[in-house]
Amino acid sequence: MRITNKIMQNNSLSNINLAKVAEDARSSQVSSGKKIVRPSDDPIVAIRSLRLRSSVVEITQYYSRNAKDADAWLKTTEDAIQQVTDVITDMITQYNKGANEYLTSEERNIVLEQLKALKGEVYATGDADYAGRYIFTGYRTESSLMFREDTLKSYQITEQLSAADLKTNTYVKTGYTEEDGTNRDLTDLREGTQSEYKSIDEDDIEKVEYHRFRLSYNNCDDVEPVIQYRNKQGEWVKIDATGKSVDGTATGGGPAVVSKLSTDVPSPYATVGKDEVIYLSDTGELLIGEDLYKELSDLTDNPQTRDINEGEIRISYQKTDFKEGDLKPEHYFYCVAAGEDGTLDTALGDTPLGSNADIVYNPKYLDYGHERQVIEYDVGYNQRLQVNTIAEECFNPAVNREVDDMIQALERMQKIEEVVGTLKGLMEKEPNPDKQKLLQQQLDAANKALTYERKVVQDKFSYGLGEMKNFLNEVNLAVTACGARGSRLELVSNRLCSQKTTFETLKSENEDVDLSEAVVQLTSAEMTYEAALKATGKIMQVNLMDFI
Image (cartoon, rainbow, N blue to C red; front, side):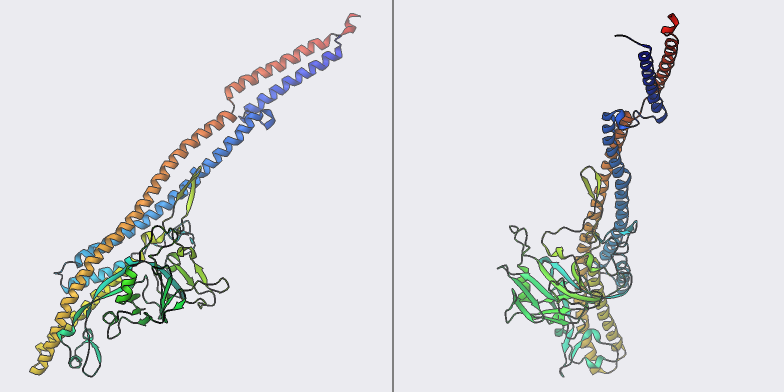
């Protein structure tokens, strides 16, 4: 093959260019610190780099954002629940004091005032928030747990109870009927009215038992509630103001719900018939007659039917007047609220149609085995962690209702003590023997009532002490669950930190150039380039004409 000068020139220029390209590549590595500038430089490095970068970004999202956000949420929750623990612990202390049968009236009054003060603090931290989101309200993070001010808004609330919620209580009957047919109550006796209580006698004072459901709210609307449950045949039984029906067909008998007030004379607590249901809207109680009590007490869930709870008892009632600090029903129950028109278009106990203007909350709560509103964070590859605590886990509405019961019993006992004190004072200054005899008769009845009421109060303190301990256990369980999530999050965070370091190291090894090696290679490329220039310069100086 004949090699001409032109061929040598072209080959020399090509080799010089290759040397220049190599020098440029090494120069780019040194200046950028990366092995490649464009994917075509090394496709394998480029593909591996994309994968590693994607992994680093994901881990950074989990570790630097999600995990830290979840940790802050959990710590805020734990701090808020801890205050509930402190308040209920203080309540237990007061119940322990009250359970002492040797307490004086003054000491009981102190306990009463302490309970009233603590009652207002139970839900104080319920509106705790994190980054503008309420942490105890499930998916409704924009809605506070409690009403911030007195509010008039109509709700139809459906509570899902069981036979375990049907309690038997004792009431001291102090009401009686005068000879002229007037109904009177001994607790209403005051100085100046003692002459009106002529027929009162010790025999009129007695203890009676009654059965009741205690609802989560008091001061409800004077609208008869609806009771619904399944009988042993699996049929839906409904009891309302019109009577009893089975699967929508009226039975023509059975109890009907009657609305009364706890202050009525004679007292509804002492006059519940066997086949009767009395609704006390002011105290939020549903008094159940003996016959219905036996039927409801036998309701139990069949474990073989997973999608049906045969032991469920639904009570639907209406409430409009909410006070500041009251819990919002939509965070606890299936309920229907009045829409923009301010009126309820749904009949009590019915499922609202989609065409009406009412607002429906938590319809799935009526489904047996439903899931609560759990908020989860992605804290790792295929790892989700619950960060929220549901309000009912730590802010049980029954806490304040239990305190309401205790306050009601103590205040009733106070009234009877005042009657006893009034009668003793009247006897000391009454000279008339006949009037003294009447006063003594009234005093004997009042003392008997006080003895009974003292026993009722002691029993309520003992029972309430157990209930408060149960509430405390529920709150402690919520704190423990929150702490367990925090511990799990800490383990995940530690693993993420290690993974983040590992992937960043792999990413650096794949992408980043060894600077000292790159400098050596750059120097070598520069020398190669310079040598190519010198060699080409010498060769190009000599051609065929020099020998002619």
